[in-house]
Amino acid sequence: MDPDTLAFAGAAEQARLIRDGEVSSRELVETTLARIDRLDPVLNAYRVVFAERALAEADQADARRGAGNERPLLGVPVAIKDDVDVAGEATAWGTAAHAGPVARDAEAVQRLRAAGAVIIGKTLVPEMTMLPATDTTTFGSVRNPWDLTRTPGGSSGGSAAATAAGLCGVALGSDGAGSIRNPAAWTGMFGIKPTRDRVPVAPHADAWQGLSVNGPIARTVADAALFLDATIDDAGVPEGGFAAAAAREPGRLRIAVSTKVPTGALPYIGKEERRAVAATAELLRGLGHDVVERDPDYPPTIWPSAYLRVLRGISDDVAASMPYPERLERRTRRIAAIGGRIPSGVVRWAREAEAGQTRRLAALWDHVDVLLTPAAVDGPYEVGVMGARGAAGFIARGAERLTFMPVWNVTGQPGASVPSGFDDDGLPVGVQLIGRHGDDALLLSLSAQIEGARPWAGRRPPVAA
Image 1: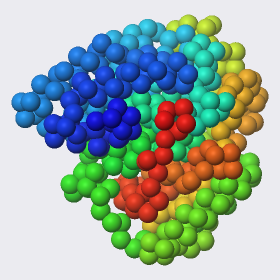
Image 2: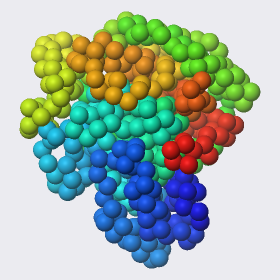
Image 3: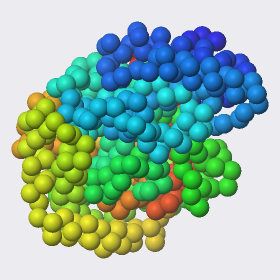
């Protein structure tokens, strides 16, 4: 098979090719490593690549396949965001302040390995995962494969760039305020923030004061569904698994469309982003859904409470994971200090307010099944712009393009970023779908229906073509 075709096949198709004996895992991993050697010096998506280990794991996968051992991700190269532990390697969080190699895989990585995945490397993040761009002093900046002068977003920017460029089959990301959905939107990928507590975050328990979850950034909806099948093990798994759910028609749904900005967020929304929402709403009507304009009742306290939890969460992570804080960027040290000085009673208020905020927003789901909003409200920053901002700039403008994302981290509901064409600069644009708590399967089904009507997986960014 043509190496580029194989690299861009995505995790689900790569798994099928290995299962059917059309390619070996070693062939796939060698192809992926060759692409990383060629493209990553330009993209800087990976902080570290496990070339020798990945080839050994590929040989083990091929032996398992030969013995009839069937696993959903058998032999597929998977990238891991560098805020998630991989045994024997540092979890660097985009900084030199880290504690060095860790002894054990995180729970999500253990589950991916059990599903047969080959762990190919760790993807770069902004320091302490705190920026919507992947700029670091220690390791440099990640570049967007669609335009090397732009960021792929953050904080899962390395995971998004690697997936978009065909440098892995699927990538693990994390999302505390949009960090899966933002880079997915800016790189033309599908990203889903699962319902809270479905994909394990252990040992990073209660990350960002309960806001952060792990999930996939993927080339196709089927790839993301396969990732969820490998990592979610609870009573809410649909019959046949998430892959089967993604292959089913969603049925006629009631879909609300809204561009109302949550109270406290900056009100700007780009014209291309509004156009993408309108085009997706029209597509959904054409697919037979009942599409109406209806706004969520955003609580006025939800934006400040989310910000408080983010600031304290950054401080918590620095205290727990960074034994050499003097090596952190000055902005990070200042934000960690601010987060640490928030009175415990104020943090407790922010956490306890969640229940009422969730109930207020849940009223929307008495009338509809899914909410459609913009994803990122403007295109990606130029490389280095966010990295140059200080603590005040981060607090004032760090979430300016994530307007519609952090709210749903507070409520814990699933949210997906779905590709929706390109802006006037030729850069990808996404829209966001939000579902009821636990309705991950429905979001996958609806997203797959959109993908079938408006395919995106065959589009390759110029740097990786």
